[in-house]
Amino acid sequence: FEDGSFDCCYHLNCYYFWNDLGAGLREIFRVLKPGGVMLAGSKVLQLERMFGEQLPLVQHDTFLHTSPPALEEALAAAGFEAVEGEEVDAESTQASFRLTTAVKPRGA
Image (cartoon, rainbow, N blue to C red):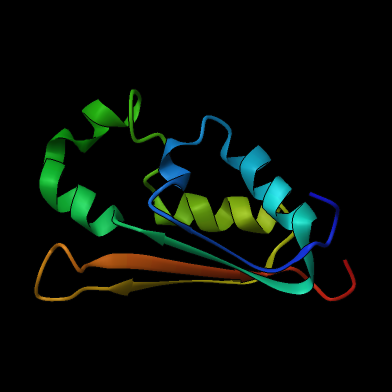
């Protein structure tokens, strides 16, 4: 896609599988228009509940990026602003998720 092609990018339950988180976020930054919004929905809360103390054992093979603060730091490093994460914890673990938002600066 050309630079600045999209107003919004939404991805659900995928960033923790990316081999290179920084490269993926820089690509999203590139294709977003200035002022564009990136939304990342993930089941990080559910993963923590499912695997508990065993989560570190599966992180290196399957779930490569499960730390919300690390995602937020990587978004800032990629150039995003207004990075915010919110846990939406419903009664059902199937409905619990984390929503992270970030904005490409208007001058970028």
